[in-house]
Length: 453
View 1 (cartoon, helix red, strand yellow):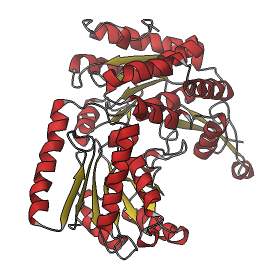
View 2 (cartoon, helix red, strand yellow):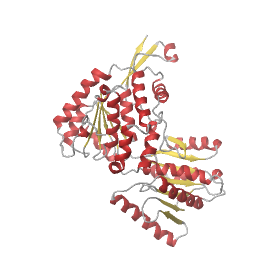
View 3 (spheres, rainbow, N blue to C red):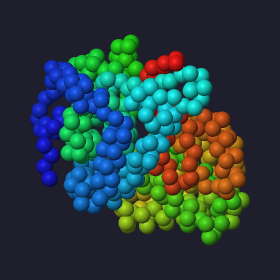
């Protein structure tokens, strides 16, 4: 299958983008939105998005086949990792889930269609309508595709023309989604643009930012600050900065019969997108006092990651990333040789996976790509004391605990500042209704018009 040249990202590598090309693209998107998107009903859009998602899950879908055929070379992810990632994302985009998201965000699935009222609003003689931005710009990170895919879907629901600027070399998967939308509904696809260039191109980005009503960006805190400083005062900005995640295993679940199951769930979170997302765990904390101590649990996790490498290999890494893992391993080899409080297990003759156990409970940032720390803590209170260095930057905590204990732990985590708590094994699979970084996914994009009856 050869992709037609519908988007700027489809141009050959030697093509050079100019400010005039960006201006023309933005103006075309705005005209197309007025003609083809602004008047669409929510029901129509939900049907298109859910149908496209269902198609992506079919083995014979041409866009899925292209993602699996060319994806390893384009992205560095193995075929098996891509399959897991595609299925996990598109499984969420059903009609029922999209409608549930609209009701959660707006109180009524028709809020983007007309003035509507909830029961409470009717008692107060009020109605309201949510209105999306005319022109929405996304500055996408290049690590995993999920945030960009989600941004595109949310932007279409709000009837916004969209320009997606991808990091250099990372447009492959966003392009495929855009082409699949174009094939399903060409008029809808004409309201979307995909381009890529190295960040910091002031000539292109100044033009793009000047056209935008709302800009979303995912990246480092420094990158977000730089983008914010260049936006016009009138432009809304939604930044998703650096976030980390970790897991916690309570002693009650560390029985010999249960440990293989818990280790498999942790491995799910480490293997998904090769641990590169903000929702991936850097550290797995485990309570001593269970039938299986934390160091033995770490060994069980290492066994599971070795098994996963046989059926779901990580894939090749750039030389610099592999060198970083080898260097980090060297540090812990020395420590393990001199102290019983440090242990390490890793794949042989490759950097495919690494498990480090150390008694020091301080939070440690992983070098990712299936490199995970296991650390003992007596309870969640001690864990949070040692994670204070990343307080305010924690996205997700994965839990393995008894049902009655899990709710108490979640309340403690919420008061500390964690915005999402989930079972281990689901860290990289948030529900469609997830409030990203504790904020409403659709609600932050729209403005409201209220009518007093």
